[in-house]
Image 1 (cartoon, rainbow, N blue to C red):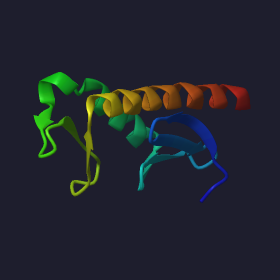
Image 2 (image 1 turned 45 degrees about the vertical axis):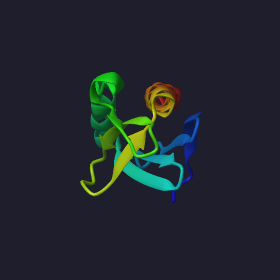
Image 3 (image 1 turned 60 degrees about the horizontal axis):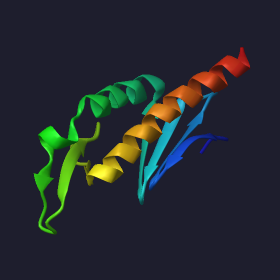
Length: 106
């Protein structure tokens, strides 16, 4: 893996990037997803457009969760409301901080 910088850590989610490779690493619990910068922005758009309250489902543990599909069709996240909000905040902060790091390199 590259020499990465932390862009955001919220709850169980950490997002890092390699400015040189333009790769994002998104860790959530024990799951690691990698994205190009364009793919990360597209995934962010999907996350931001997803409404928890309009899309949540009851799970067997009597908790409502929203299912978030990843670019890999076989992998989905299932977030409780608090987890989903922290995940969205982490992604927003990561894009902002990535912009800051890019500006610092200019």
